[in-house]
Amino acid sequence: MGVGTKRRTPNRGSYRYHVLAVRFLTSCSAAGNHVEQFIRIANQMGNPASSRLSLAVASLVIAVQSFAQMPTGPRYRTITLHSTVFNNTRSLRVWLPKNYDDPANLKKRYPVLYLNDGVMTFAQKGVNIATIVDGLVEKGEIPPIIVVGIDNGACTDKTTNQEVDRAYEFLPYPDTGFGPDNTYQPAPPDPHGKLYPRFLTEDVFPVVNQTLRTMTGAEFTAIGGYSYGATSALYCAAMMPKTFGMVLLESAPLWIGPNGELLNDCNKCHQWPPHVRIGLGTAEGESNTAISMKGVELTKQLISSIRANDPQCDLSFVLEEGAHHGPVDWGRRMPEDLKALFKARS
Image (cartoon, rainbow, N blue to C red):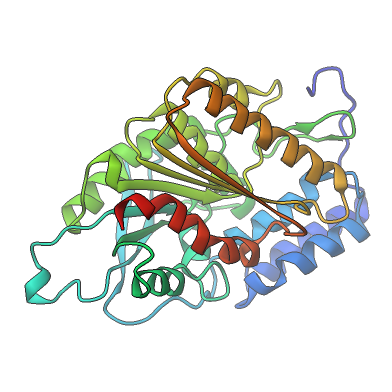
């Protein structure tokens, strides 16, 4: 895949749109509402065969950090994190259980859900995780949990290019697309996502566990993400299966690596976290049906591999008809995602 194949890049009209989208999204307070519109316009203005353009625009929305409306009140907190692994500084965004600070609960500890793309996770016009979790806890469908949203590489003190910096930290291998008609030059060509497992264990987990009353065992620790953030979560789960009890993958591009290296790594794994939840839409690529079909094909390959290599893994998969690649879709599936992962702890 990608070897000996002519690579296509967006035409000038597509590139011009892409640049304008970057400028607009970085100053748009309601960017989460526009993800589907941007993908549709990109496909109309550019080359419909360019999978990179469609997913890049969606990724830009995820990377938007400006003016996002976050939750308010004492249960929403931010922790400043300096990463020794990536040598930069970012925020961890936290949603605490109701009555966390009550004197009667001061010795109580809670499971933790770590989600990549912290801003989009908490933005009210993004996934809006705080509202979702509160609703599920109120109904008794999941136990009280701590949610930690990890800001991505596009919102650190070293950020210079939002799209590239996000992919730089998330991707363990370059994203060159898939043949024959959806290949492209990777950006960045040398991502450092193989460091992300270390970033979690050496930078994120120690700060969170020292600052908050967490339950630290693997069975109480979940990792998840969306799009490239899901790709990163998958890689971390494959590399550190004993670190997590639960994994959530929403709309993960799985063609990562010029020769399918990401899936090759997964195929070598014979132990997975006990609970894995995968969500995907049938219209992830909008008008580019090749993206949607490839996404379903590779996701089913991953599922077959996990089930064959680790029959004890509790894996559930939802394929949502007509769903797209954006926070509206991820937020809509999130309640069932969390119930599937935390059901054993209710």
